Amino acid sequence: MADSFYIGMDLCSDFTQLSYYNDITREPESVSQLNNKETYMMPNILFYSVSSKRWYVGGEASEARFSEQGVVIDGIFENLGSRTPVRVGNEEYSYNQLFLMMVKLHIDSFLYRYEDAVVKKLVISIPEYNSTIHSILSQLYKELDVPEECIEITSHLDSGLYYIFNQQHDLWINSVALYDYNADGLNYYRIDISRNRKPEIVTVTHEDYSEQMSLSIYGNDTYAMDNDFAKIAEYENKKAYISSVFLTGIGFSDKWMKKSTNVLCQGRRVFVGQNIYTKGACFRAVGGDYKKFYERFYVETKENVLYDVGIRTGNPVGEEKDDFVPITTGGKQWYNTRGHIEVILDDTDRIRLSYKSIRGGEEKQEVVKIHGIPKRPNKTTKLSIEAEFDSPSEGAVIIKDLGFGKLFPTTNKVYRKEFSLNDTPLPDEAEVEVEEDV
Image (tube, rainbow, N blue to C red; front, side, top):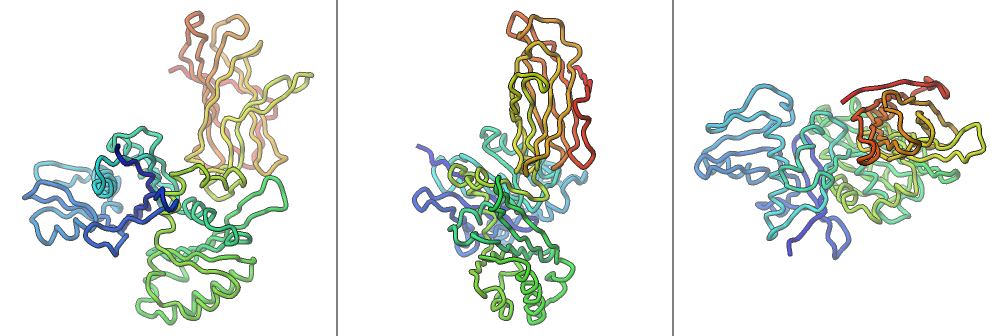
């Protein structure tokens, strides 16, 4: 029987990290390079060997380039979207193709260590949403020959939350601090939990310190870096009672923290690790008990949807019960928020859309009037209603006529109603007519 793995991938511009879920320890384990068991950060380079006519990736590519004749390809992230082709042997590749190949080879380099190993679920964590990367990775399931739903893309912030909320409870009984010090500079995230209200809400405050602290500013002056970081940590510690601190990024890989360590460790536990995002992505891949914090809390970040989108049933001015039926639920990243329901019209040609704030209280409504569907007997028109987002506050509801079996075939009509959940109010119970034939 083939081994099937839950895999988390941290995909950055220079390096990739992998982790897999160990069923025995019930924890994610980092994947080391094949040629260096002490290293978990795999460089994002490719090498094509002319003699063996094969591709290498990561540490193996770094090694093979000095022992075999071939072509080295790096700077893949920086050139995504470039129209300049790369010639390798007799073939030409776009950087987008090379990027997809690189990601697949990183995964294959792990799977090849086990006989007939396959991907059960893969979650790829990237620093933040990138439309080009998402578009390319949406084709990865074909390359890996797995169902489309086996692959999911998330962000570093979401992966960090998955990691933190799957640690022991006393580490996040109060606020949690996450410092990410990478090649672009220092970013700080404070995770707060509002327990005195229902629903309980996790909010994330972000402070960008990249102009004050970056690796390029200090060079070898670790004394100045230590003092500056200590000042930032002391300032942020005064804003909230922090239970624990997590440090990640290559900026924390060297042992330069002395004064700042004393500041961070006063009354709280501090953890340093380069594998927070890959392990958080692995927890997300497993799901189950590891996503219970999303069932308990609504998570409010700059990339998460703060509304439940659905329909209202019944007559709002009559005695009939007026229920809310959700299509999508808030608290998740907008690019991972989508859903669909099916309804049968009961003596109406209107759909009443409802947008409910996850903070409670506020609800916006509007009515979509369906035109162009032939007159049918009551309760013989079935509709598919989907919701998708283009940003945390904007998206569309797509309504499709499904007909009603062989008796009343579909018209193949699709109705698209765009919405914006910013401060501008929606037309309250206004009729909005939309129609689009496919």
